[in-house]
Image 1 (cartoon, one colour):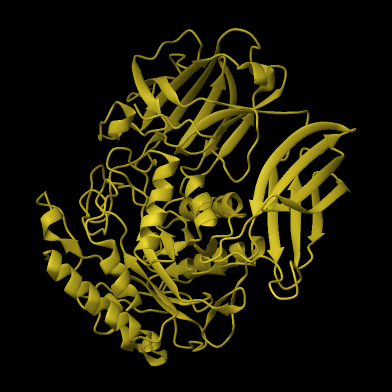
Image 2: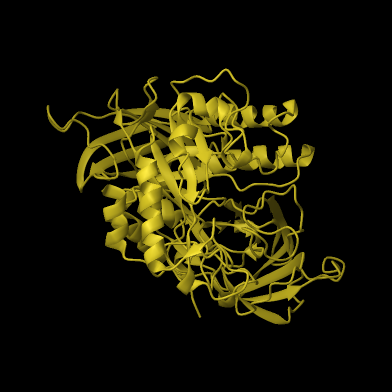
Length: 579
């Protein structure tokens, strides 16, 4: 049995906590009669067992059934550990797909409707300090095409580049102790041009003061004590340069410097919350000349598409070390970042990207049916994505849409174009410090910060033409127009953000296994990969994203297999990338 017992939120850590991962009671509710039958009551017993945090469709869950069951129930019986007794207790779910309703000891607590985001409830008044407590969760995961699904199939089976659904609890569940008030959110914005950091603290409004202690490699570089101003407080910390040459310790893939932060919250001189977090000094910007800049210097991005699936655990990483393993292998092959495709990943992915120096594009999981419900869901859940991932310095780009999924008529439909633009402005309103790629691949509104092109041709012989200033307006890669309209600003950077996808014949085991533009034997793969990369290098672009890091179910075009083991020689890939 795989158990995820590490603290689940490494970017915002509290010391006193209790995991709820492991065996839970479980039941499908195909007749949707569980509420009427009182499944939420403590006395009601569920007949099956499931290993949390793995979706029932995975082998690791202990159930391993891929049929659609739209309603399911979970129960966990536990006793409070000593360190949590007498404290205020937050119950947190890192992700439940899709709609979750929660009861504690038979009493309704609340609901959450988003398959990829974290949510919490204060359950203090419902808990027994001694004896057993019972958490009950009802999950509804309909096959609904206007629901942001990412790569989860909406037709009940795998097809093309879509995979089995992920239903129910699929990330960690835990309890943690706080005082009478606590930090609800903390947003951190470093500014390398002014050598300062802006903190925004949200509390419940009862706390009076906060201490901020900033350290670098164990040495305290700044201490601030501030009075809180109601529920939302902003605080700017000025940092002195390290010396006249090196200045502030910037974050970059080659030098992933991180500053540690200790936050201590007080209410009338009493400590009510303590959190350990961190930030990286980095700036991502455009120079108006067609270049993307990192820390005011040109950045060439060598990204790999990463869908975050594992053979036995599905969308759930089997361990936090597995995420570090993927990043290390990608860097060993010469890539300096990843486009995390159609998924909000486990926090440890972004944490290790921060620590190891790995650029990340964070992408909104797509819906597939444009209507007013999709507009509402995508907009609110894109907001949730940005807030949840806000403080990770490795993330440099937000991607709200991909290949016009869910906005199939965006090229000509004004309402769908308005959605794309509104998502751009939503991101900029919350976080003006990062780039926004509105619709990755094609049919991008001119408002987008840069141009992205998808081209899965066998050899990429048209890469240079498609990415030229004239080609961006006139070319049709894969039969799709790159931008909407003709009034293109030629100073926008251009990147080729999906290409390759080569399957290696020796690793194709099933009749429906596939890759893009045919498959090759191993030597043929190296030859074709080199031709593709030569054509990339001959193009006037600011970077690329190769498809893809791993095999995923029937899509066997990864550099690693579905268990994340290399199929190719890592050094050969690096030599081709850097040659």
